[in-house]
Length: 221
Image (cartoon, rainbow, N blue to C red; front, side, top):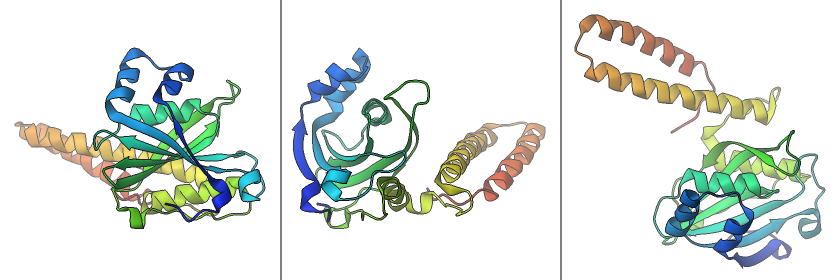
């Protein structure tokens, strides 16, 4: 699947009930696991032992999990819950009928709860065929490898200024997504509004939002 060293291949199936046992899931989320997920395979393990690469300041190990679906869509809550509770950085391979997506989040150690992680904005690919499914291991330590994975999966979704770094770029990406949602909702309201004066007022607000959006680094839909 990926052109990774053979030493990193783990290829071990994880029974779904293991997630029910160890993750803090409620009944609704458990039912989502059952309905949407066929199986989960721990595909690769990237660590100083398997890669002969230095650990990072923030990233000590990266897991590649392949999630096989029963339907074409997976609930964001499932990915986020797994990501938050497993104490490693994760790249998700989403598999549905031999079509694939890659998911990754900007993930930081929780400063209050030891061993827990704060999961932030997700970046993902479109659905792609297996021949296009690949990410390259780039960097001198696992911090750099993980950042390179975010940039490879995010591509045009995130723009990093060398002087500000990845965290700032993720924050800007998040702000841009928020503005896009506000613009979309306002455009729908304008289309439904019958009073001309209200339309004019909302159009002015829309221009301001679009102006703010134009001032943010680009993130493609």
